[in-house]
Image (tube, rainbow, N blue to C red; front, side, top):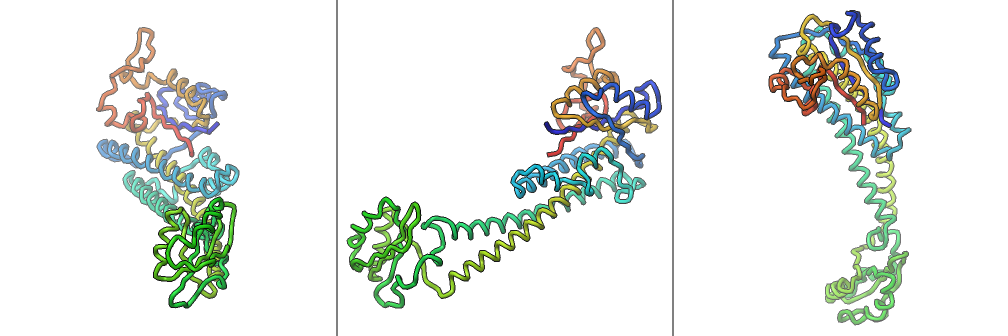
Length: 393
């Protein structure tokens, strides 16, 4: 069962005590340890600009967070492909600052050296955006290189290990079976399905004029095919090859070159070593890409929670922010517990029945509320408090 995290922020005025530790204890009691673990999540007091700027920044952060999630997913998919879905090895590469991702998030603190809290929100968003683009480009470039080398190696390996219709003939064909440097006669190499061998031997001499009688030589065979060498006069070669194709026999183009067999092996060895090298580089880039993209994502989400809290609750900055660690199965229970205790924070945003309970189909949430950053995310259901869910791929 996958781990799921919820990041939420509530005004201290919503609790019996204005002390953050007391508010956190109250949250723990609300959610209960059966459904999730509540951890403190500290957010610096960032520089706040105008309301218009905050509304725009809420929109920018929503888009940026979506991009972060997409980059993290791409890095995960790339690592998963290279590591063949080996979960134990994947866990070794999904580290953030050399810590397991869960540990990094559970003990998160804002990187004040890298993202100085005295800078404006616009500057911080711009920095994080540039960093995400750089990570995405670096990972994409390295994994594209790896995929290219891997495809090249697979093609070379198929030439070594495929059947007689596709594999390289250099290690197979003895040059002694070929008629070479003749003005009139040339040798053709024909791949015949094993179950057509008798038909071929019976008819090849009459497929076209001037096929050299009894010239067929069995060069090689595998489980599916037999490779024959046949000599014809050059002026009737085209007709002979066309007739072979009509019979579903495959002509192979081949010209003996001294040292070609050794050259092909050298090429295979070279690309094998290159694939091993680039695979190591891609894995290292994947580890770095995961660490960087997750770190950027959590910093973006931190800013998003801050901006959303200011838009919802106003000043002064008296909120409690917490991280809830739960599972995908228990997350709905966490949400239900929070709604039952804090839905009143939505004020008139929710309609209520005669008993004061929130009616979910209420239409009171207007476009103005959405513009003021009061959605949990694009297309997500409105909540009466700041609430985001995180799940790592």
